[in-house]
Amino acid sequence: QSVLTQPPSVSAAPGQKVSISCSGGTSNIGINYVSWFQQLPGTAPKLIIYDTVKRPSGIPDRFSASKSGTSATLDISGLQSGDEADYYCASWDVTLTIVMFGGGTKLTIL
Amino acid sequence: QVQLLQSGPEVKKPGASVKVSCRTSGYTFSSHAITWVRQTPGQGLEWMGRISGYNGDTLYAEEVQGRISMTTDTSTNTAYMELRSLVSDDTAVYYCARGPSIVVIPGRIITEGLIDYWGQGTVVTVSS
Image 1 (cartoon, rainbow over the protein chains, first blue to last red):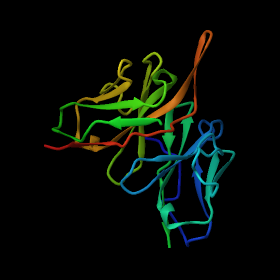
Image 2 (image 1 turned 30 degrees about the horizontal axis):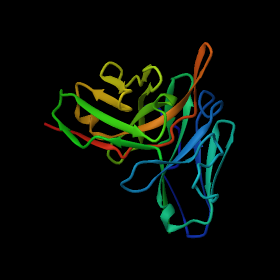
Image 3 (image 1 turned 120 degrees about the vertical axis):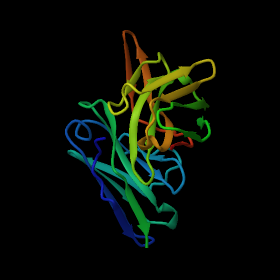
Image 4 (image 1 turned 135 degrees about the horizontal axis):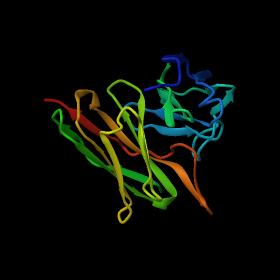
């Protein structure tokens, strides 16, 4: 299935900031909102960003996101060991009429 | 609080069918669709389709079209996903998730958003 493009892995030390990119196209990210999900090992994904920039209740403001053109970015600042997880972006594609997910990015805390 | 509780693990032989349930609580069932997503071992997430909690309208991914059926039971606020003619590549964790939200206005039904709350996942193993 078609996917949005994410880097397979990123890493950073505790307290540092990391950015995860998500590249799509004009039929998805270019014209629709982006969501981001965090998946801790052995658990279901959890919504951390919706409508491109909004955080659900309970998600710390260390997590932020943005979009420019057909790409989106998730920023995580003040990294903690508990942030080590897989992160997925997602957006509705109006041409394929499906939800497209990114391939996932594994965040490792050094 | 919003909860989605899925049925237990399944082991099926190739060619068989599997039906996974997703019992919801904590919100008005008709106000959201239920989306089904699967995750193969060590791989990413794959959208399979969605069913409206309002009127049962479905939208399926092309990859499983013809083999999948999604239904709801509004008396128990439960959604079901049945996948037929199973092959080994269908071995995966299957998730139900709430979303998108459904807004009913005179003459129109629109959807908003993507997915927010997820079920705990159901492991489906297809093996001879």
